[in-house]
Length: 240
Ligand SMILES: [Fe+2]
Image (cartoon, rainbow, N blue to C red; front, side):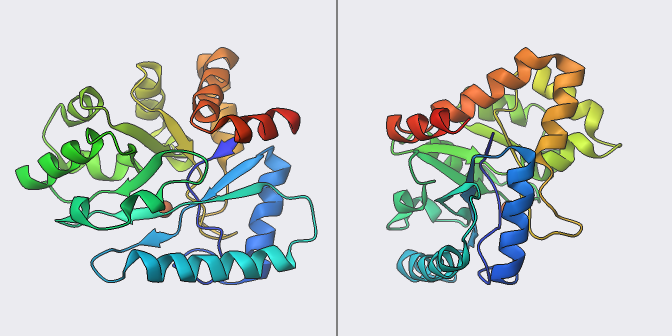
């Protein structure tokens, strides 16, 4: 399994608060059968430059790598890029894609999007520079006008949902229904810690398998796998 959304790097954002917490999260992911995890710390481009973020991320990753003596899921560095007006003009955006892929995870406002926000996002998705993935779409879609999810899908945006969307009683039916209609491309744990936002990707896949059949979860896994370069795919298939 591949987790494309996590906050496992230590002391970078509101995710893992220490190297030891990161190691516990990674250990839990390994128990769940995750082979590759994208580390996607929050990036706020209206406050920080891409270079400064990349430096902080590299230091955090180095500290974690030095302490990691076990065979844990492999980390691929990325970012969860917070949308701001003008984000499409920011230099270095492409360097925030998840390593080994051309996926850029974008966190959209949870308030109603203006026509500017929508057109900037769609233009970015259609720029051909990378594939734009809306992070935990379930948080931002409720405030939008009806049909927004279909509009995004028609305009080449990819959709990521959190494992919790499938696991919470009040949202799981809707989550399964949208997945069945192929309106969700990726699942991510969006884990932040080992408490209320712990890694729970396996439980979500397990539920989907029960509701929609194993072929469905196999297809989802393959879809995520196909996003990676040939080299990465070889690693994943050798370690399955
Ligand atoms: Fe996140």
